[in-house]
Image 1 (cartoon, rainbow over the protein chains, first blue to last red):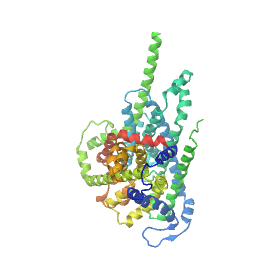
Image 2: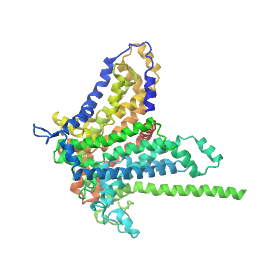
Image 3: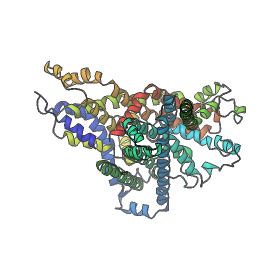
Image 4: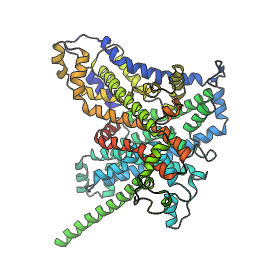
Length: 308
Length: 281
């Protein structure tokens, strides 16, 4: 948070020849934002916690206080542990793979090659493509008999699995799509980071006889550490909340193979109308995401230089 | 000497060829779903499963007409357009105003308030989902544009973006007008906003893509077909017309196109927005 501290200092400059406080205009400028953020962010975040202590179907005017029972029910539920496991596998799979591919593409693009802008746009298109359209199209690409993927695999003599209708492969398929949608984002951020590394570092290393691999290992990688950290955290936060893809591609199935937390929450909150229990699910997701966010703050304050 | 040079040159050329080869393989994987979508959407039904799968050789534009008419897509487009315009306008204006107050005005509790606003970025959407839905329901907004727009009329991220940008504008520019008796509104609308086109563009493109691509919230707060947005409409369409690959891919293409066009138009600002926030923190 160095940036914020620095900017804060600059805004603290004396207001030359001006009335000390202008809460009147400030109120007008801020009121709409405060009203919306208060009503649809702060209040809901607190109210979710409150609601998680009740049993309520959303219609009945009477809600029953059950204390921590919803949480106890979660811990005792196989469905919950399945959702947690599926979410963690999805998040780990997408985050790590997209990170490696992202840095790989960025390093390749950070060379004096032609068509760099063209490549960059192509790699980035999946990021901005609507998730629903993405899911719909990939669902067909994964079609067991007529899909492009299995036909491609068949072309080289491999019999592809039934992907989305096979409990053993469905999650892998959704993860592949998650990766496809994430690599471009990582690539763009990495590329900017690579371009901010002064060329003189490499020139000096080359004079000292460092090989390209050594230059990458001892200059590039350490200097990319803060960027990597940022990308891991944002990717995890996004992945923990994945919903659209699952909704469109598998509806959590087959069986519960792709029943991620977001979908599990949706089922209980909006299909079965168990608002208290669903709020408890939401708070577990909050806790999960909060841990990652706090880690980010801890590390970025500590310099983030994990790699010497 | 000459031979050494030639070999060195050849080595560089070889390396760059390998780089291109790898990049092209990756670019193909990125583009493949788009190619398939476009190709399939332009095929006549009987040729559906026949190669080429990734290169349009037929041009059955009729599919688009059919898809457009098979579901109320004109209505979905209207709804998404209204929602997206509303969210883009509101997020840009309201966030700019809030960002200006945080950047320039002095009032008690400003820093606390700013950190609270930043704090809302740490609240994940699923956590606010059920209570927000209950609020909207209580207000009687289910199935209205209010429900689609107002809960997302402000973006904490945009407020942050605007504040950071405004802090880089020299105060002297406002001071002359201030001495001439201009009020905060005049300063904001006449001096600050006209100087802020880059950040306005960045904020607007983020809002646009967020709104146009949004799915879960519109799914929850609309019931009637008349109020569905394009993304919800496409998901429904998949349920009903899933077996008609040509129509479905035509519909997916129609729904994707505005996002791609918007991105291409504001690519620079969008990528600058990502990399700036990504690297600073």
